[in-house]
Image (cartoon, rainbow, N blue to C red):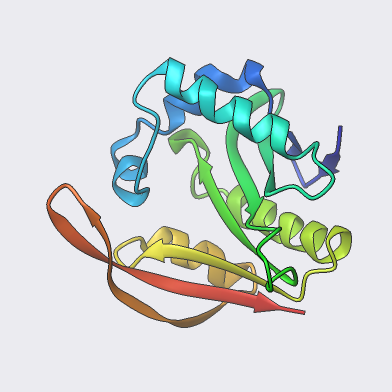
Length: 174
C-alpha cells in the first residue's frame, strides 16, 4: 500500500473501511452542489469504493484513489484518474473532496500538490487536468495554489437538476 506523507496528514490508498466517512463528507450541501454525482446511499458509496480499490491494483489502472487522513481520521480523498486513455497516456486528471471541518486549513492544496508530484513521477505524466464549477471559488483557489493554470471555461458543459453549469478547466504541465 502506498503512503505519501504530508505536513500533518498522510495520503494512503482508499479502502472499503472508509465507506461511512466517504459517504458522509459527500452529503454536505456545498459538496453535492459541486459534484455531478455523489453516492445517495451507503450501498452506492461502498460500490464506488470497491471499484476504486480494485482499479489501482491493475497493471495499467484507470486511476488511484487516496484517503486524506488527519490524526487517524478520514478527512477526504484525492483521486488521480484517467491514466489509461488511448492516445493520451501522458496525461491524467485530479479530483478531490474534503470534509467541511477540514476546509480552509491548506490540507487539500497540500494533498493536491503531493498527488501531482506522485503522478508526474510514477506515471511519467506530462500534463494533469482538473475541473471545477465556475461558482466554486474555494476549489479554484486550491488549484491555483497547487500550481495549476486556468486554461478556459467550458460553457454549459454539465446539466444537473434542470440547470446548465459552466466548468473551469485547470492544468499543470511538467
